[in-house]
Length: 296
Image 1 (tube, helix red, strand yellow):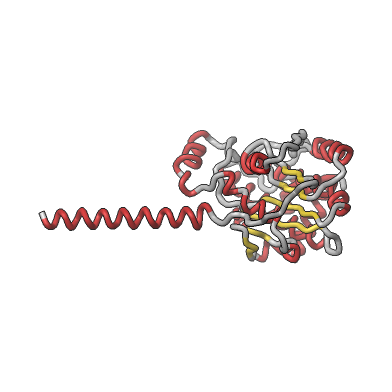
Image 2 (cartoon, one colour):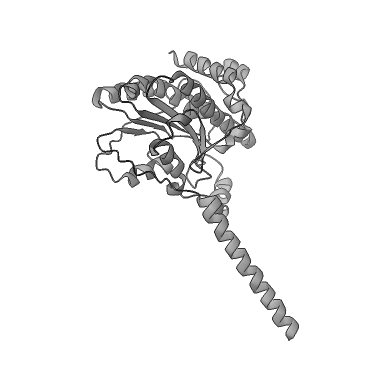
């Protein structure tokens, strides 16, 4: 009996310890920090792409604003991007913050023949930002926030593949899809790095960020089995969209980070990136090929 009691006590002790450790992990690592900015946006205008779902939708809902306007924008169509920018510039006199939030994980091609993931995650946002830069400069101090991912660490930019096939990789397996997603997120970080250099001397600053692993429908085009495992089996390790929006809000609103323009953020903190994510030659080359693809 004594042995059994001791054994039960040990199991109880281990269970309590595990639950405490799991709670601490979730609160500090999964949930992460919250944006502490008290900035008010009265009289200012913010664009959030991809605001029909996920993080973007949550930020609109949490803003509490009664002046949220939804405008049609298909980042898989350069014509749509140009039309959106034209309509916005005609109807809105200000632009204070541009949040390039939309993203997907998908095969296929855009309307203009580019790889879908590359076209939406990078190229559409590249064009949109450039079309709106003059308005951002007029309204400075203003900001551009590019939602990237920690997956950029595993990405690469294959310019030969881009020039030949208008996509980052040509494979069609699920693993290839993950790699293309990582590649596109590296493009986001490199774009931010180069944009910051080109914005020196203006009152526009820019930042890229990793929002965390967030429970959204970004993988809605993946297989039902993968979605089931990722969104339910791994739920404990994923942020809610509200938690996942905090670093985006930090980059958009936090006071005193202007000197960090071009930097990458995670968990509301500026982070160092790998050499490939701030390589000036690669960043400039990506900018130039993106300009050519967009006919800028």
